[in-house]
Amino acid sequence: MVFLSICRIPPASLPSSVSLPPLYKSKAVYDGLTKAITVGTIVGLAALLAFMSWLAVTEPKPASSIALVVVYVVVISIMVVPFLFSPKGFYVTPQGVVVKRVLRSFLIPHAEIKRVERVSWTWRGIRLRASGGLYGYFGLFWLSELGRVWMYVTNRRSLVLIESRGGVKYIISPEDPDGFVEILRRFKP
Picture 1 (cartoon, rainbow, N blue to C red):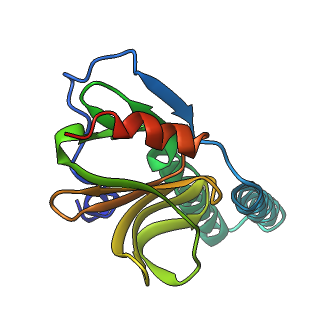
Picture 2: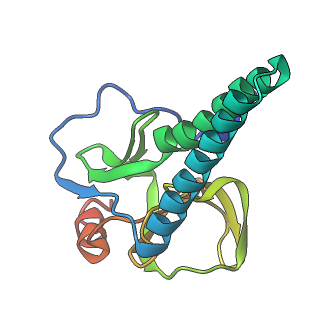
Picture 3: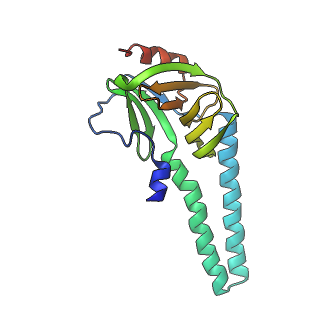
């Protein structure tokens, strides 16, 4: 249950009442650094698996077989779990903004949105419970200019800040951030 709380993304999973098709749909496109970190990590972990497999074959001992199984489980978890929670797209629906993921997509209702604006990337901050480049930058961060913020970013050049009336801040990265902000501002009460 600890893992699920780490992956908990407010305000929980997407309600089934969200209507589709969306009014606006954007893919979560990787920028160059996200691609490099993701490919580099996958290649490095695949090389580790290959080396461990070679070691297990050349030195067949019970301990090496157990170690191989443990390494496989850990490496596959490192590659698969972040992918499942990484942003895949951003939609504007009549109900609100949907952050689409393989697991636990969620909705930020229009009625809860207080502020929407473009922001710039900063490295001045820390990851609290987040992925720092593998499949994007997503999870809970603390940024010097904004404080605690939930980020769902795959492209550091197309950032949009959404602040809720309750003070929860989200940063997302739609393909066309200016168009996304324009459409979203139409729904401001």
